[in-house]
Image (tube, rainbow, N blue to C red):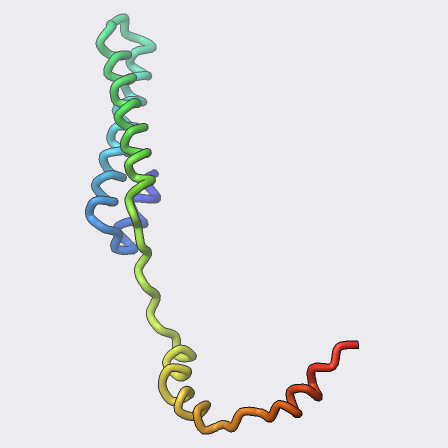
Length: 109
């Protein structure tokens, strides 16, 4: 999950996505600590806190599934720039092949 948070900041994810991922990571961490402490301490509060935070983490995971996350659009490559610029003007000047030429090359044995 920590990798997802770093990827969110690197890729420029929406703020809501970053906040949900961070809160989910904090809940998972506290629930893990509460579970570990609950093994060694005889108190009824610690396991209840762990279960509560685990439920909160699950709810946050479900909510984050429904958040629409669009990845950033990649920068156009030199080939894209050529095809959309100079290449398209050149291709408009190339004549289309005749139907006879297309039919001659459409031979299927």
